[in-house]
Image (cartoon, rainbow over all chains, first blue to last red; front, side, top):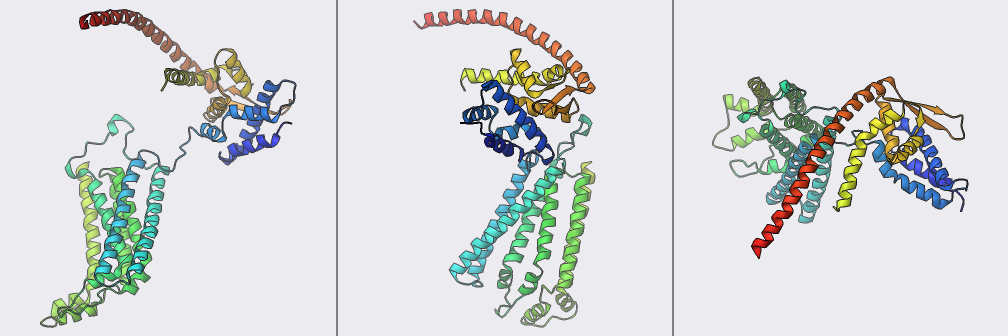
Length: 328
Length: 134
């Protein structure tokens, strides 16, 4: 059988298509000459047969092996060490929170009788788990891929003088970061997927249920909640990766908290999430109708809540600043 | 892992470590990849083309080799040559290599003598143990 040039070309294509575009033509031409030289050596003056070509290409190695050797020194992975261990850790927390939160909320929905029939709830639960887990997985993976690609160094270890101190007591960021991630995900799961259960828990003094939250307004503003969770998880993951309170952690926390505060203010100023009238009426169903300062607070519960969120974020920022200062 | 496999993987590691030095040294005169594979094999250093070709490309990216295509012959050939920087690196590495060889050989010779003695001791000890068991 004559020399099968097509097999060589297919081999070269299989190798070069997985190499960087600017190297492809050069590598292909160089390997084509190499294969030709190897065939000449094997066959001498005789024309190479298909079997010869197969032997030579087998000797050269599979296209996969060739690609590995050509790219051996490159950082050809999405998330390498030391980020990989942290990535797995964050991924486990996030997925556990998503699955646990959705399952718990679904159970509460069924128990409080706010859901549909069993089959509908079951399918809804499965759908929510798949959709939310896929989204969470994608987000955490992309986040750590960015950390890896941008080379956000986990610790500064350039020289002996740069070695970080051994964390003392509360100077490790791990606990706070994990708590932050868990809280954000739980908050998002309840508000985004099961706003009904918040209302299911509200009862007036006379036992009549009332809707404290406007579910339609929460659904309409879902994108703000998603953005809030993404900002929060990204900030906390950075804290976790860094491992201790540094200037960078403070800056990232500051930026994340300012963004979260802006989103919270925007959310609560533009959407009527809490029904103040319902609260006032609920209080009125007790012994006496609220008056004076209490009435003022109850009527303005949403701005008050907004103030609490901003204040909490401010306290968190000051806390991180203090820990950063102490850790120096 | 079989003993032969362990030995061949150790030999492969040793060879890999010296390959950069050999490539920089052989390519003082321009040569194409397959010619270098053949010349190393002729000196008892068999290196697979799929190891050498990517290596030469990496050395070129590091500025230790330079290359030029020759389209004049029967086949297009890419000739590599060691750059002045590559020669500097080669000199420094070569010096380290000689020191290392001398040290390693000296240690292996000395340990070989001790090992010879301990082997004899161990054989003697084994015989004593067997006697004690009887």
